[in-house]
Every structure is written in C-alpha cells, then in structure tokens.
Amino acid sequence: MQAATMQVSIELPRSVFSALRQDPTSFVREMRLAAAVKWYEMQRVSQAKAAEVAGLSRAGFLSALTRFDVSPFQYDADEIVEEAGSE
Image (cartoon, rainbow, N blue to C red; front, side, top):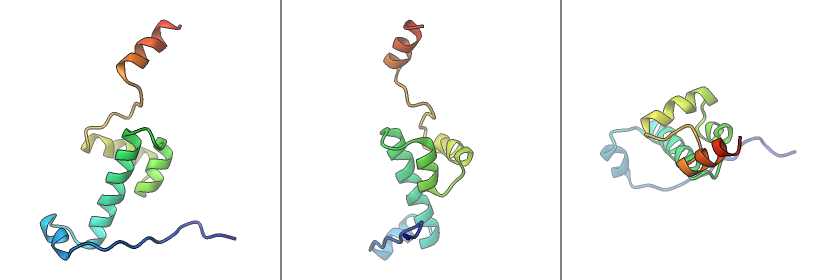
C-alpha cells in the first residue's frame, strides 16, 4: 500500500528567504500556492486538485485566486460566447 503523500526536496540559496522576507516554512507554503494557481490558470489541474496542491480547502483556494488576479472561471471570452450561442 502506497503512502498518501510524498516528500520532495529542493535546494535553494539562503538569500531567497531573506529576499522574500519569509522563513522556509512560509516560503514552501507560498510556493505550493503559486504553483497551484499557475497550473490552474494554465488549465492543467482542476480547482479541487489545485486546492489539494496548495494545501487549502477549495473555498480557500478560490479566495487565494484573487491575490494572484486569476479568475476562478476557466473559460475565455470566445468560449463563453460560443456556449451562450448554443443554447
């Protein structure tokens, strides 16, 4: 039986933490959120999966999207017009 999580390790210069004024724990939390938001924005993961990557509830993830100025809707204007015209 496999574990539900996997630990991944990366090496970063110490200066990254001071430049961003964050301790390593806060940095990792922010990095997970930034990756999740970007992958969601690129339509590579669903809201639910992005929230899981970020370590947030789905509602928490949707709230975090506003910080990054990313729409919670994965449709562009053409898709909305097309969808509206087909009804």
